[in-house]
Length: 190
Image (cartoon, rainbow, N blue to C red; front, side):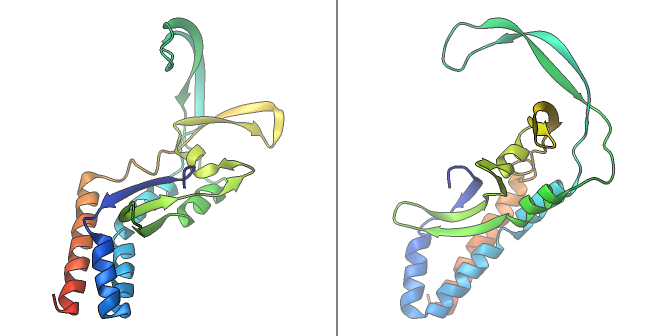
């Protein structure tokens, strides 16, 4: 899904292994898929832990003259831009959005002719056409105050998706995947 967040762990010949297991015993293929989906539990737990924290409030802001380098290759120029500093983190409030994003985190097994692997993804809750999981991933974003489009507020996001996924967690997920495939092939008799 183009508007969701995802990353995958490449697994060689996963489609071939699952197709062979289906021929031997469909139950073995089902069990392997279940184990592959469970391989991402540790990463999703780290992402949910990050989502359980409250991001800081915007404490102060100031206008600074900054060098802007356009991405389209145009000449760089100077312009005033507002920068925001983090303030305190308050307790309480509504964490419904963070709860919805955390509930949408999934591990998915992909075995198509073009792609194969184990993905961790979220499509997140939507407000209109906006995917709030992508918005919350940003360092900061603007939103209308209580839906009033004449008043806007800046809010810090919470980069929760890629940040907690360390190389160590990826390696452990890869090892769980390899172990699950090996166990399935051993149960199938080779």
